[in-house]
Length: 101
Image (cartoon, rainbow, N blue to C red; front, side):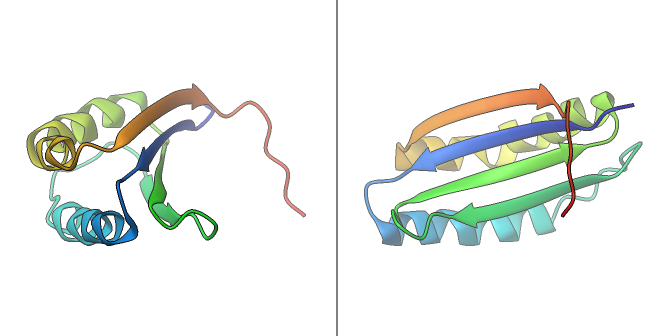
């Protein structure tokens, strides 16, 4: 089974708002206690050339875990993010090719 990858890109009004949102992500997802079927990882990446921009990259082994995590995010993350009004783009897909060097 191929990994499912979701990337959420946010561009905030300024770096301080971006940093504040990253701190909230770390806190709220640290409180997430729901059992998952497979392994899921989250990476938060802040853009070094545009410090008001950041991405969250989720990788899931089991498609059902995407739903479980979405429900938590809809309740605890999205309302807060929407108050900050970033420009947001989301891409979800299946990893087709992976190369390690």
